[in-house]
Image (tube, rainbow, N blue to C red; front, side, top):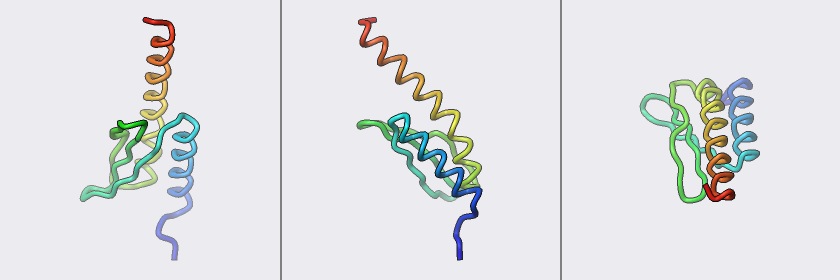
Length: 83
C-alpha cells in the first residue's frame, strides 16, 4: 500500500533536488492543519510554505525557495565586493 501518490512523490522529489542544487536542506513537518515545508542552511532555517496536501505544499514551496536562493546569492556577491 502506497502512502503517497506518484504526483506527491514527484513534487517532493523536485523540491528536494532543487534544495540540494541550491545548497538548502528541506524539511517536512506534519501538523494539525496538514504540512509545513521549510529550509535549513547553516545554523538557520525557516518556513517556505504550509498547506493541507503535501504535494501541493511542496509545489508551493518551489518559488519561495528559488527567491531565497537569489537573496543568499546577492548577499554573497555583495560581501565579496565589500558592499
